[in-house]
Amino acid sequence: MKWTDGQIEQSFELAKERYATVGVDVEAALKRLAGIPISLHCWQGDDVGGFESAGSTLDGGLAVTGNFPGKARSVSELRQDVDKALSLIPGKHRLNLHAIYLENDGKQVDRTAIGPEHFAGWAAWAKAKGIGVDFNPTCFSHPKAADGFTLSHQDAGIRDFWIEHVRASRRIAAYFGRELGTPAVTNVWIPDGFKDTPVDRMGYRARLQSALDTVFEEKLDPRFNLDAVECKLFGIGSESCVIGSHEFYMGYALSRGKLLCLDAGHFHPTEVISDKISSVLLYLDEILLHVSRGVRWDSDHVVTLTDELRAIAQEIVCNGLESRVHIGLDFFDGSINRIAAWVIGTRCMIKALLLALLQPQATLLGAEESGDYTSRLAWQEEAKSMPFGAVWDYYCLKSGTFPAESWLAEVKQYEAEVLSKRG
Ligand code: RNT
Ligand code: ZN
Image (tube, rainbow, N blue to C red; front, side, top):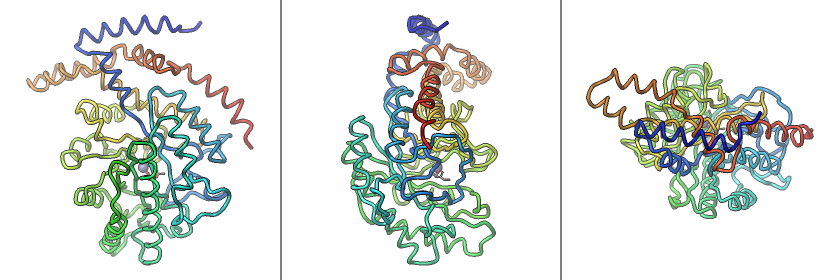
């Protein structure tokens, strides 16, 4: 038996009526939802390997486990996989590239020598799809980052190398922004930190500050490029001190007018980024999110529809912040079908946004404002059993993609026909 398109439409009509009884305009919610892009991280497709050289190893404290067959081995395979994933996700989204995903024609290109020419293929691909691209310098998985330090390194030569790389990355981002007519967010994340207790935290942080200032001396048009900086509490091998901590980058973003990037896995395990959005956006114009799911640590598990994901979406949607919050994903799982991982994580992000848009906000606000916390709690819980699934399925159908679980068969077929044939 199959749940037919007709049944999806019927269920939707009923659901719409039900939502109307609690003051929620479903059509308006779907219209708003369609305007919120999610930036899909390219690195889920190949376990953060990149195509700079064959057999490069991941470092910087990042770890991907699992060896599910069919990992993309080239830019063209990765593009094919992203195409597949995007076809199973409702709405128009973006792609988030790392510098190591360049097209170098088999020639070794130094990280300081990368330019728009190495990303022309991606730009043409994105243009054809009508989607935007975001960008990241890759300050890890490289001999000059082997001791775990980049922009804060004691050695001026190594610092300069990474400064040059980030400068080159920003120019590539601006190229994407110009080509695609939508600014690229360039996100700087560096692994720099100490396994054990350092004695000169401030010296490292001062060097990072000055290196970043040098990087950003070159002014780029904000219509093409926006800069973000990503903090972290600790990483594997940097348990005792991360140079680019939250306070460091919060101060940096504030004083330099940059975007702050909040990664859901980069704080204390019980600390949540949903609670930070409303605070930092009172001081900053825009932020970037790396939506991820830490399990006991910054493990970058595939995003699922957790309470925290819903809370993040609520903060964005209920405060009308969608133009100021750039939503990026950041997870990597090599133990399951990598396309399914993208699809599950991205669909969950969109579901969370939809749930937030369908919340009886006026009622909830009224209850809170009048101090009626009994009603607030009651409504928050009742909202959970409203017919959200019917609206979601309809949204998928109308977006020309697969409702409910029907996307999975597509992935399984792709696995049999494409992934299983890769060596
Ligand atoms: C690492 C950061 C960073 C990376 C990507 C690959 O802890 O989260 O964003 O995951 O740049
Ligand atoms: Zn991140």
